[in-house]
Image 1 (tube, rainbow, N blue to C red):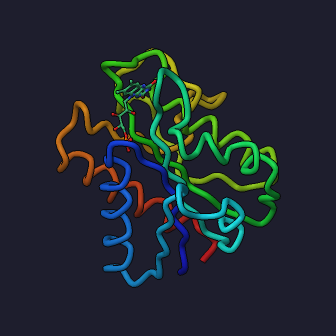
Image 2 (cartoon, rainbow, N blue to C red; image 1 turned 90 degrees about the vertical axis):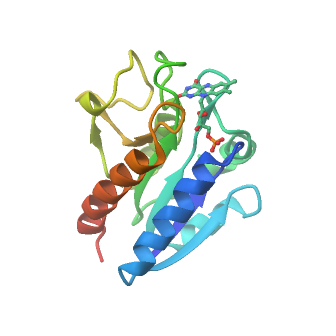
Image 3 (cartoon, helix red, strand yellow; image 1 turned 180 degrees about the vertical axis):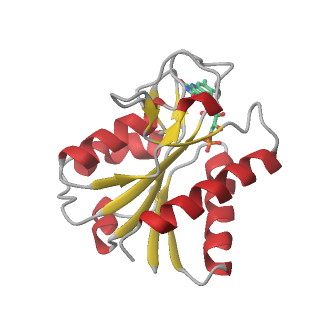
Length: 172
Ligand SMILES: Cc1cc2nc3c(=O)[nH]c(=O)nc-3n(C[C@H](O)[C@H](O)[C@H](O)COP(=O)(O)O)c2cc1C
C-alpha cells in the first residue's frame, strides 16, 4: 500500500511522530512518502488515495503555522475518492479546552469535500475538557499525541495501535 503522510511541526514533536510512523509502516512493507507541508504544494495531497495528515494545535486552538498558511487552498481541494487518517500533537493539561483542535479544523473540510475519514479514537484515553476534534458521537476524529505529558514510549505505543487499525481501514 502506498501512503502519503503530510505534516507540519513547529517544535519537532510532530516530525518525530511522523518519522516513527514512516519507519513502522516501511518495516511492515508499505510504501510511504513523507511531506512537510512547509515545503510541499498542498495539492500534492491529491496524488495519494491513502493519506495520513498530522497537525499540532498551536496558539490556543489554532493550526500550526505552515498548515495555517495553506489552509484556504486545502479546504478547496476535492477529496472525493480519498481516505485519510488524522493525528495531532497537543497538550491536554496545558490546553484542556482546546486539546487537538487542529485535527477537527483539518478533518471537517476533508469530510465536507467528499473524503472518507478513518482512525477515530475514543476520548476516554485522554483527560481534557473540550476539543474541535470531537465528533457528534464524542469520539476524537484522529489520534492525539501528548509529548508534553506522556513519554515517548507511550506515544509510540499509541501510534502502533492506531496504525494497525487504520491499515485495516485503508481500501488497500
Ligand atoms: C503557545 C502554545 C500554545 C499551544 N496551544 C495548544 C492548544 O491550543 N491545544 C493543544 O492541544 N496544544 C497546544 N499546545 C501544545 C503543542 O501543540 C504541543 O507542544 C505539540 O507537541 C507541538 O507540536 P510540534 O512540536 O510538532 O509543533 C500549545 C503550545 C504552546 C507553546
